[in-house]
Amino acid sequence: MLKHWKKISSHSLFKNPWWEYKRDTFEIPGGISGEYHYVYSRGSSLVVPITNEGKIVLVNQYRYLCDRESIEFPCGGVKEGKTYEEMAHAELEEETGYRASELTYVAEFNPFNGVTNEMCRVFIARNLIRTEQKPDVTEEFEIFIKSPSDIDSLIRANQIWDGMTLAAWGLVKHKL
Image (cartoon, rainbow, N blue to C red; front, side, top):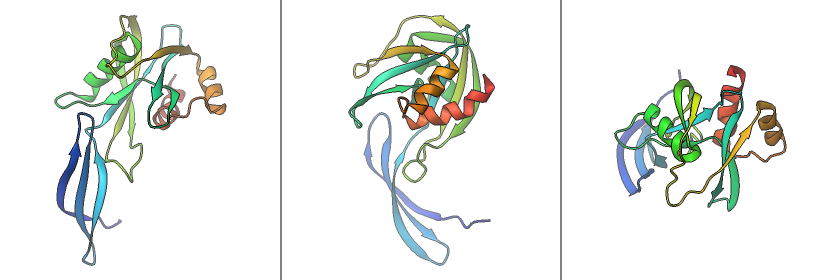
């Protein structure tokens, strides 16, 4: 078994509604100590919405840091006091304008384990009911409805490049 590091202290350096930037001091076996800077997150919920016809709902949105559009599954951070499931339902409706009467947990993963503690839980949403999109003021979404083979083609063509979407597709595809 690998030796675990001992956390000595943790300090918040910056906090916003979505995440917190922290600095921990740690000690490894042998008495060596150091600092670790990372993004602390309450987690995220990613939803793979499946229509009654077996098609998959995705969103296209602008990503500021990359300065380009990105085709993704609906996903968002877990807000304080909310569960992963509650956030999955909320993000689905906010981003796509669909509600799901069936939400199934698939798996969880960490999107960048050297930089964040975030665990992203992946859900499949079925029995979708069309409602109305409710994007935040900084969000704009274009809805795409694609077959599983279309998604594979978009991935091969590097038109789907979002890491969380790629990871979720790998976890979900065999369950369709």
